[in-house]
Image 1 (spheres, rainbow, N blue to C red):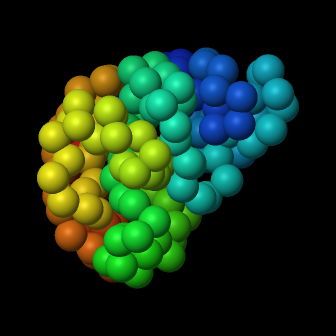
Image 2: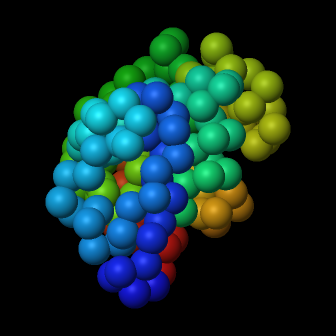
Length: 147
C-alpha cells in the first residue's frame, strides 16, 4: 500500500464509509458525513447492524473482542483492550461485541469461550485467540497476526 492510496474507513459514530488517504490516517481525520473523529483511541461498541458494516467495509484491520457483561475475565481485560486501542489506532480499529446481546453473531463465528478476540481484514478472519490478556500482549498478538 502506498501512502497516497485511499482506504475505506467506517465511521464509529454514524457508520458511513469514508475514503481516507493512508498517509492522512495519523492526522485525525473526520467523517465526511457527521464530521466527528474517525478515531478516538477507544474501542468501538458494535451491535448487529454495525458489526457487518465495519467488518466488511473497513479496509483497515478490525479486532473484535467478543465479551459478555457477566464474564469476570472479560471485565478484567476491558481496560487493557482500551489501552491497546490507544496504541494501535489508526492503523487498526478495535471493537467490542456483547455476545449476550448479539448471540447470532457470536454463533456465526463459533464463539465458545470469552473473551475471544478475532482479527478481521477485508471481511475475513485472520486470527483468533481466547482468554484475557494485558495491553502489551494484545498489541503484540495483533501485530503478529497482521505480519
